[in-house]
Length: 280
Ligand code: MG
Ligand code: MG
Image (cartoon, rainbow, N blue to C red):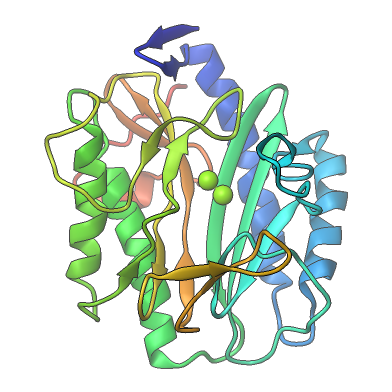
């Protein structure tokens, strides 16, 4: 595999391997979302994810993460963050209730390649502001993905996410700045960071073979966060709800391939006039 600057660039065969990993992520997330209902618990979802991972012959990108940075090893295969929890929630035993806004983040390693994706789920009926927050965060993710193209710059993705959020139903969403998207490949977190805000036309050039996780992490109120005593769970300081959507994408010579979307991103990219360009 080639490296441009410090970025890991994948060959077509390696992108196909990344796609296999991405599809496992997507299909397990489908099942987890289906089970994210009132009365279920995050730890039940995590147990289900462990079982499905084993059946797929894959391992978790999350379990045990953090030891090298001095954190307690992450104890689960999913991050499940409820309401004011922003990211990195440790799945526990508190039952989901009608009106909860739940982000499920899931990462898989399969035959040496990582996939990483997150979805925000409304449990039962959520209030209108929470529904808009999730919809606008999801749209910002897709607008960011649609801005990725060879010859453009990393800042173009960041600027597209930010301007999409500013055009959302609520003008003052809190863009959580300390967590960003990232390069991904033989490790889950690789260079470069992909901030959810920034200026177009700056930053490293996007080239074919780059794989990135694009993941806006957005609060309904202030973007200021705090870490709970478990050293993992991030919450908003003002206790406003947060949403998190994420896909792993590959930049190919002719456009974009969304590795963790069942359709490869075809529907959302085409709707935006962006080029859907899988490696077949
Ligand atoms: Mg993730
Ligand atoms: Mg990620």
